[in-house]
Length: 386
Ligand code: NZQ
Ligand code: ZN
Image (cartoon, rainbow, N blue to C red):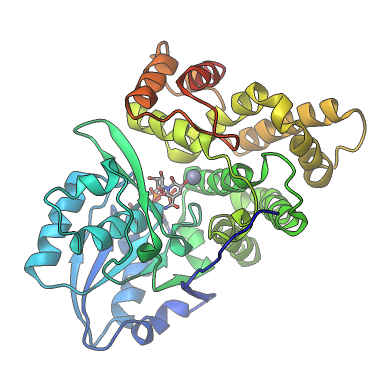
């Protein structure tokens, strides 16, 4: 096991009716901005619950943060935060709204001229404006981590940011929000969380027995609840396990003491930036080819995953490892997620070269758990998934 430090300060309020506790979590006298997305919260009752819980606070609202939160929209929110002397942000939404609020938390206290530099120059945030979240879509884990991913249409970029100052102060996780989530987003949420575990687990053996079993148990739980949640999102037991699995998949715990990969996410983000493909679907596209390309180096973990998660116990290490890749792809497909780029765009020729060129321009030459995947390997991996 590798050395590590672990600190996750986010307070979680989990379960039915927890939104009502909101007011006790926000500092008295705070000037609050409530931020949300395209309006789903107005039709599923979450907005009303939040507004009721916020009675007594001075609240201003900013709606319209799009999926893949857009820099230009966030800059409008930033201007209002400054003009109205806001001092507490409340994100009510999925990963996009929460990530947008994390950017704002950082940008509100940033004293440089161009907030985009926080992303483009990878400036870590050590202190941000305090914020809380009411999660409406289990998927990203953003509700209990300090990372954020922001898109910029003007330049076709999608870049990550983060830092210890960007943990939510609290996050409210009420699994009842799951009942209004459309099938497409349910499948996305399960797939994204599943991929988060794979990025932190599917590397090489590091003697971290407990972390491996944490990871495997999250994968098993997602596999178990996926058909239930897809069939009936109002199944509270399935929804609560789905929600907590997504949070646990990316709150830092399972990555402690182990090597991590994250190359699938790096490549996937480019597919969203180029074609607007949903984040989770880009991961389903890249994962099988990535595992095949890195087969020899990931073989031991792939075989362990095949045995412990998929129950494939027969055959050689190689055979089990190959079965694991097939099972993974079939799992994504079982939720209606296509695993080839050509299913999303007819215009896929040249994608691999374009992504490799972008990575070259950014000097991204050390991806993967061995920190040795550069643009040339990225080109080959992406091309394997057409
Ligand atoms: O915008 P509204 O109207 O709220 O509708 C949303 C949106 O259209 C809808 N939705 C959310 N909750 C709902 C609901 N519809 C009905 N009922 C509900 N209860 O779902 C749609 C998608 O929402 P979005 O927030 O975009 O989805 P998700 O949570 O998957 O977030 C994706 C974003 O997070 C980033 C992705 O790159 C992407 O930009 N990620 C963030 C990470 C992090 N911060 O740690 C890690 C991830 O790997 C990921 O990169
Ligand atoms: Zn993800």
